[in-house]
Image (cartoon, rainbow, N blue to C red; front, side, top):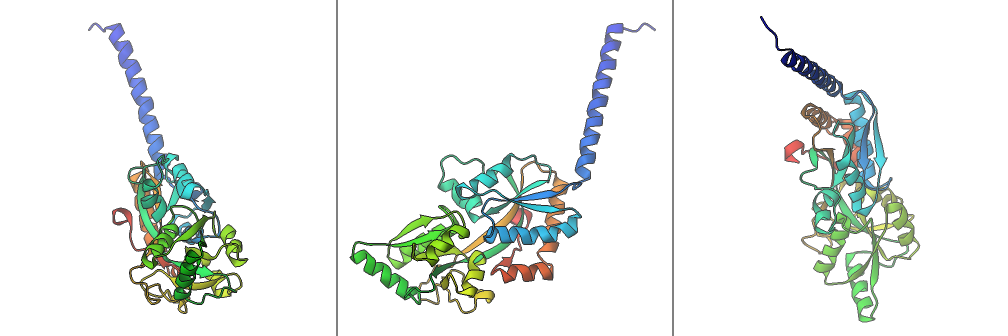
Length: 313
C-alpha cells in the first residue's frame, strides 16, 4: 500500500494540533471545575461605609463558609457607580470578580449618562438580590425642623425670599437623588442638590449646617440617626416603618402619599461566567440570605435580605 507522504504529514500535524487543543480544553475545564481555588472579589462601586458596602460585607462573610474560600470586598467608587461596574464588566468571566450592582447602576444610569462603560442588560449575569432598604431624609440635630411639614414650610418660605434650601446626597443619579427629586415634585418645592461622594463627606456638611438636608439610604445612616449626635431623622421612604427605625415615620405617615421607594443592591457576574459557577453562587447566596446570623446582621443595618435570584432578579 502506497502512502502519500504529503497527506501523511498534514494528518500528523492535524493530529498534533487537535491533541494540543484537546489538552487545553481539558485544562481549562479542569480549572473551571476547581472554582474557587483562590479568593473571590466583590467589587462595590461606592465608597466604604455606605449601605452598599455594608451589604457586600455581610454577603461576603456568609459566602466564605459556603464556597470554602476567602471573599474580598473592593471599593471602586466614581460616576454614580459606573466606574466599579464598568470594571466588573471588563473583568475575566471566571467567577473570581463579581460586582454589587444597585438600582442606580443597573436601571437608572443608562438614562442619565451618554457614554456608559457597560450595558446593564447584556454585560452581567444576575445572581442574587442582596438587600433592600428605604431612603431617609435627615437634618442636623440643632435644626428647628421637627417634621416633614416643617421642612416643606421652610422651603416655601425660602423661595418667597428668593432663596433655596440645599440637600446632600451620595451622588447624581443614585436612587437617593431621584427620591429627593420625586419628593420635590410631590411637595411642590425646589431644593438645590449638593452631591457628595458618600456619607463620609456629606455627613459633616449637614451636621455643621453647611447643607440643610441629607437624603441617604437608611442602611447607610441608621447608626448616625440612632446616635443623634450628627443628624436627626425626619422621614423614611418605605411603605412601612423599618423595625430598626420604629420612631422614624414614613413619608406617607407624614402626609405625603406616593413616596414609597426602596433602594436595593444585588450581586452580578460578568457575562460569560461558566454556568456551574453561577449556579453555585446562586445556591450559596440563597443559603447565606436565609442564615439567621446574616439576616440579623442585615436587619440591624436597617435593611432586608433579598429573596430574588438568577433570572427572577
